[in-house]
Length: 292
Ligand SMILES: Nc1ncnc2c1ncn2[C@@H]1O[C@H](COP(=O)(O)OP(=O)(O)O)[C@@H](O)[C@H]1O
Ligand SMILES: CC(=O)N[C@@H](CCC(=O)OP(=O)(O)O)C(=O)O
Image (cartoon, rainbow, N blue to C red; front, side, top):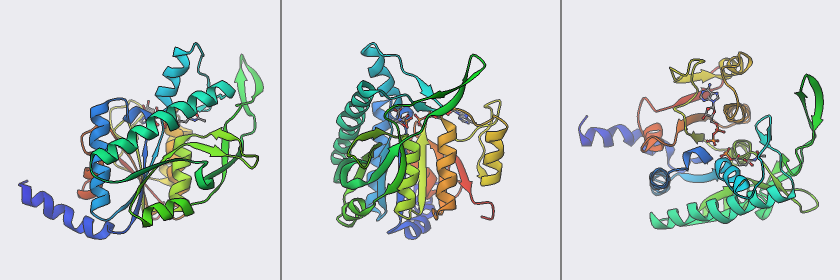
């Protein structure tokens, strides 16, 4: 395809997406390489300049894990959620808010737009309650495990984000929530991003990780498109496991609550965000409503 064809292919999408809201979840695994993160943020800035309202929600699981290990703490997860004692919460805040969020905002500046970094407790964006204990099997015995300072989102207040978008800033959100007593809670970034997409009535929710999309059991093939029933079946059959579960669950929740399109794409592939948005075939896996 010659260069002008590439631009012509993008043209109807640029028109269709103008003024629409897209929530991009940047997973920790899509940010391990500085060069990769550069191109992702470059793409985000381009979307901003073609008139899309872009919101970034980021994770940082691998960096929190590394920092915990550096400090002699052993990371533990239950159902994909980090057991978060007081010290772990401080580490998570330090890594997510102090380092990753700030780094993304700086890159937005580098590529010529204006980013504003917030965490979910700014402007009550993410209002949560402490998550109840999770029942799991340990040595064949059912036990209740308290996750500590982990939040379950109860309400999202999008007004601060609307205000930033209205004024042409790119909001960058760290997955820390606040409870009614003003205490911070660690929330899963996929869940946070999905809830924010719903509250903003986003047109698209794009989840960027380190895999090409949802893959089959043998991990030899990527599904191009799955509806909610098909995705739920893959969870039941154990094809979708671990960190992919909250991604799929947040896509499903988005679709059931008004978001038009949801995608899981590989942030490590060069300019995957642009390819997803502005080409006919797209990339990764699109999860759709059953009737779509
Ligand atoms: N069916 C599946 N297809 C693709 N990846 C899967 C699947 N089931 C589980 N995974 C795992 O989910 C991981 C992505 O989740 P996670 O590690 O939490 O990423 P992130 O840090 O980007 O949020 C992949 O690296 C892969 O190991
Ligand atoms: C409660 C909980 O598990 N919170 C996550 C928040 C970061 C996250 O979700 O990061 P990724 O998107 O990179 O996985 C954690 O502590 O790892």
